[in-house]
Length: 135
Image (cartoon, rainbow, N blue to C red):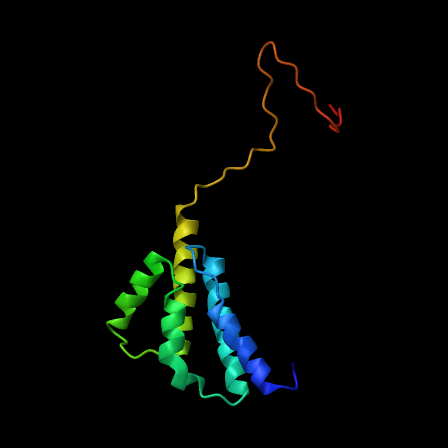
């Protein structure tokens, strides 16, 4: 397969065609963008004018976007009506970053238990494993 550019081309096109749909998971969005970048880069290295294929590739990839991501992409197109594949993957990476940042700011703060011993309440037995008995 590696000696046959025709088969390599088909393999990379198959990767693009078979991309799974996206979710609102930042790592899935990054993976989706990376696969597009990798496949289009490989097609370019094989001598194909990939930017000339931007319209059908973007059409195919946009069909895989989840509703919110597709809506955000359509809004983005209002300011950049003729995007390149590179602009599309940059948009995806930025959306993943925004999702990640918004999720981390909404996560509840986890408070670690203090290592200071609390006095045992009346009627409770406390078992201290591995504690030294120094007074």
